[in-house]
Length: 398
Image 1 (cartoon, helix red, strand yellow):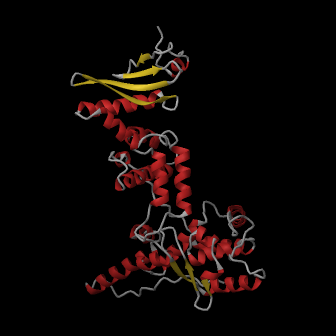
Image 2 (image 1 turned 180 degrees about the vertical axis):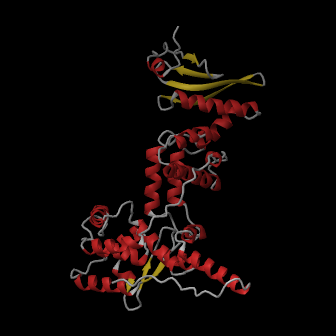
Image 3 (image 1 turned 30 degrees about the vertical axis):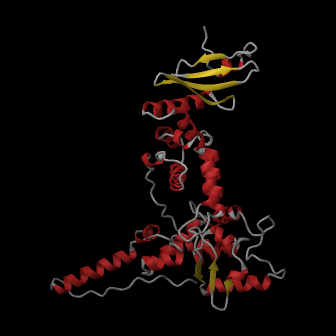
């Protein structure tokens, strides 16, 4: 006889005779039953004998509760009963535990950083997008049902290593938050997942590329945007939403109200940036709110990628992203001998690790330092005549 404890089998079960109930036992899970009433209602129950007394706990109604969910809950209750807990109380506790989706939304609505600020719209969008793309299978699961093994399979199945690491971090954030506010005492499954080691991107505009870059930028309809990106080192999203009210041309500063790390940032504007902004302000006859206005709902420029791709093609430059302009400013600061603290401050980095890349981007400052030191040692040791160490200077731009 075919096992009726399948989705199709349960769907085909008839109503019980009037005044009775039909009981179907799950051969895979001890004590798990499906009870069918004379009205056709079908409910999952767990039967346990405790201290000589039969205890029946209703888990949920089919099809709102699937067979897989019923088996998971039954296994959890069975495990707790084996430790001496009351099955009804265990079931109640499980029912009160939120699903992963509920915990995620609670985090989005209520999470605050150390500065007391809520998550940025970009972060919220990223969390929901990642959950929808990579975590649909666990969105409806209770937190305690999400195992490390299951998350490990999800993590390994994502082609992009960077995105896989992002998924792991988001899951970890949800579980840490849920534990912090008392939603669950389930272990964090992400804690046992190792992130992929990803080498930091070190692409920036090389000296021989700069003439072609500036020539192509001059001919681009978004040339001002790309120039301000390299002159300020600002993130693309902040530059897109740059408002005139946040720019003080007399003091040559631009104050970003809220950056990626949730904090404000004041950026000094070099003379070239001030000149661009003065011209654009004079041309802004309609008193626009944004420096780079756009026709969409945001009111500002949203997607500069098409203009960027056309500009790169005209310049004959490959493998360069808009974000690399930010990295380019930092690399040229390093060339001029700026400290990591100064570079980090100018780029609005929150941690020293974010700035550490600039210590290895260019060997010229290191070479000059090593050659100066070795020359001094040889001179002091009388091995060779003192050598004149010529400081490295960049060629003036025409």
